[in-house]
Amino acid sequence: MAGQEITGRLHMVAHNAQSYTLYLTLSAKMWGPGAEQGGVLQTSTGKMELKEPYYRMSQPQVQTQAFAATQDQQSQQLMQPQDMNLQSLDVEAAEILRQELENADVQIQ
Image 1 (cartoon, rainbow, N blue to C red):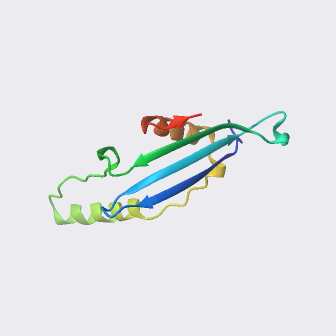
Image 2 (cartoon, one colour):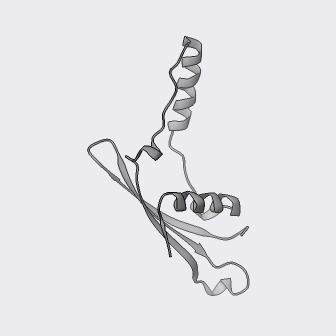
């Protein structure tokens, strides 16, 4: 719901083979009447192994030098760290995240 608070914890474990295991926990806080009393409506946890092919990013072979420069700039932009504010996700973002977690074999409690 719009205005619903989602909080979470992301724990990344690095492996020697240039891969990570992600442990993700998200909690949706109660919203609406009675919300001032606190209480968590739903908590979801998941474990994702980034070494799996599903999470790999592949790029097509570059044909021209100008095209290669453009692709290199775009990939650098994609690879820059992004700040995630899980406390201000809107309903649409929360739904997308929920679907991604379900696709990654996440246990929803």
